[in-house]
Structures are given as structure tokens and as C-alpha cells.
Amino acid sequence: MKSKNRSLTENKRIHMARICLRLIILAPALLLVTCAPCGCGSKDRLLRGQAFIVPRNSENVKLGLVEVSLIGEPEIQKAISAKQKMLARQEALLLEQVEKAQSQLDVAKQCYSVFEKTNSPATRKEYLSAKEEWRRLIQQGGNAERGPVLIELITHYETTTKETETKLLDAIEAATEALAQAQKKQASVPSRDLFSVDFAPLVVRKVTTDADGKFEISVPAKGRFAPSGSPLTNSPQ
Image (cartoon, rainbow, N blue to C red; front, side, top):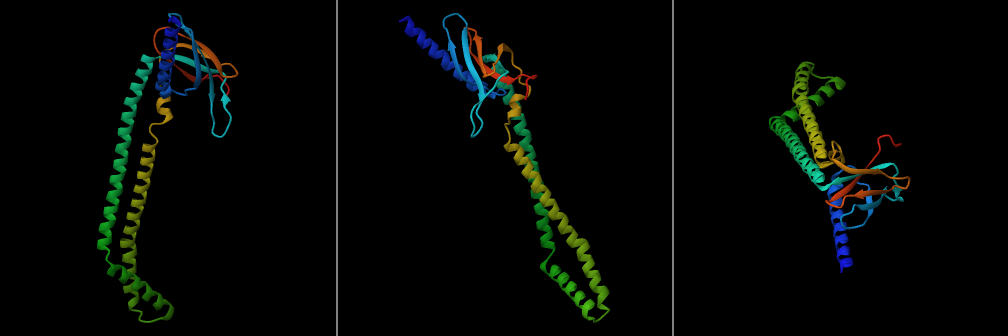
């Protein structure tokens, strides 16, 4: 009977360890993928594991010289809470930037719409007609007195109407690009950096993996903990 109870207790501990693993996934570089806690009762438990990564379309890469830290659940919850607040602030800021960029694009399009209404087809047609008449006048000759009139009409259109149109189209293009960049930033959140920067929880214990990425770490009998791994700062890249 005692053996059965111990087995159930051990299974429960393993289950809680898996829950902690899900929580700690917000930490930088969760490297532990296999673990086997041993022992029971009031004694510390021994957690054996191996750190490795699984590249796409490649064999597993063992990670030696990785510092594996044991972190208590309260520290994990505190870190997650802080990151959630940070994420909320970042999301609000990015949403504001997207809305501002969208507003600028809407204004640019509205300005161009107004311009199109004032730049009637008749005005454009008159400009194109004047250019064609000027071309014939230069190539074939004709009424020289029409020359200054044509030049004034063409110059006025190109230095006012056409220049205005170009500026408005440029404004629309710039606003469209700004909106695309703001939406791209918004889509990239949350990023890995958000969780890895300033993540410095109180560590209960820590060890370093061997050349095969394997490690053993003693887990206190009371409490719930999760392992987290990160490369040593002086280890080769």
C-alpha cells in the first residue's frame, strides 16, 4: 500500500514538474526536454536531464556548458506577471502607432480625393491639348502668337497642378509604407527578446551541463520548481 501511495505521489510530482515547465517557457531559452526525478518523501529529489535543440530538418544538437538553473514557482509567477504587464504596455504603444499611421494614410487619400475633384478632366484635357499644339507649332510652324499662350498654360499646369499631384501621391506612398512598418512591428509581438531581457529570477540551485548536454540537479523536497537553461557567458559560440 505504501509503495502504491509513493508511486501516486511521484506521478503527481512529475505532473507538477510538467506544469512548471509550461510556465517557464516564458523564460529565456528553455533547454530541458527530458527529465527523470528520483526519490521521494522528505528528501531532496534528483533531477536528471539533457539540454539540446532540434534544428529544422536536422539531428538534435547537444548543448554542453549550459547553465541549468532551478527556479521556484513564486519566482516564475512573478516574472510572468511582470512580462505580461510589459507586454500590455508594448501592445498599447504599437496599437497607437498603427492607428496614427492609418489616420495619416486616410488624410493623404482624402487630400488626393479633393485634388481630383478640383483637377477636372476639362483642365487636364486643356493641358494635353496645349502640349500637342505646342509640339505641332515647333515642328511644323504656325501662328507664333499662340506660342506664349501655350507656354503659359503648360507651365502653369506643370508647376501647380502636376506638382501638387506628385506631392500628394508621394504622401500616400509614405503613409502606406509607415502603416506597413507599424503593422509589422505589431505582428512581431510578443518576441523572444521581450521574455529574455531583464529576466533575472532568484535561482534556488544551478549546475552546468557536460559535453553531451546532460546534467543532474538536486530539487528540494518541498515546493514546485522548473529548470531553465542559458549558455554560459564565457562559453564559445
